[in-house]
Image 1: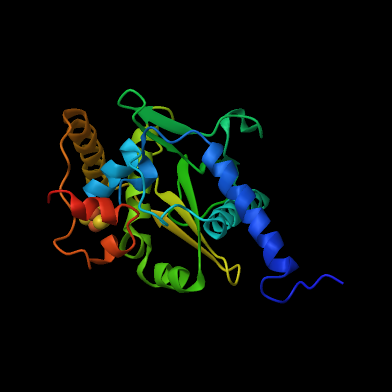
Image 2: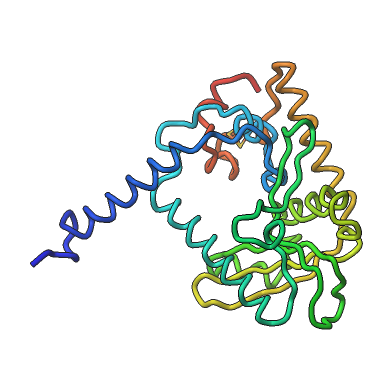
Amino acid sequence: MLDFNSKGQAGDQITALIDEALVAERAAMPPRDYLGGSRLGVACDRALQFEFVGAPKDDGADVDGQTLRIFEIGHTLEDLAIRWLRAAGFDLYTRKGNRPDGDQFGFSVAGGRIRGHVDGILASGPAVTGMAFPALWECKTMNAKTWRETVAKGVVVAKSVYAVQIALYQAYMAADVPGIADSPALFTAINKDTAELHHELVPFDAARAQTASDRAVRILRATDAGDLLPRVATSRDFHECRFCAWAGRCWELPA
Ligand code: SF4
């Protein structure tokens, strides 16, 4: 009988085969050649620049199979959240024409060098205090600790990267969906450990969107000019740097 428990036996081998397949799948995908709106709230300009130009990551910093599985589980949970919101009576559009094979809603500016894909647009729904339509819908899945922090502090304080994404998407989607920036966005956070839901209405913050947009332009201009953007930190021990996939490259280059 196959042993699915012992380390180094069948179970581990199967997991390794799955991870190998997922990593190969990802490697076969064309690299992203634009600045993603979902990334423009990260702390470091230089890290964003490395990401934009596709600078090779440090050894061992590439996304592994387990992380890819976490991403995919997140996407699947987001599909469930779509189902749940629709079941609750919200008219939620996630793809053009609301067809499964339709393109995702999104925006593309600066000649396609800044882009974003939105999770959904709420066209109508039940009467909920403070809600108006059309509204941007953004969904994230989180572990219990991050979810609790988001519930306690709100997305703007607990997860500012998401708040920047929401503001930017509201601003850029307004051309295609008039009125979307006049309504608060609906932010849904799913606790992956307990299936608890957090829903939060996020009013449009024009200043936050403008700051992110200006930042994107700064990164594009610096890259076009061949200028290396400054580090976010003065020490490699800084929190962002400890988790940065380009830390080795970064700290060998000038400040
Ligand atoms: S190591 Fe730190 S300063 Fe350098 S790119 Fe990464 S986050 Fe930015």
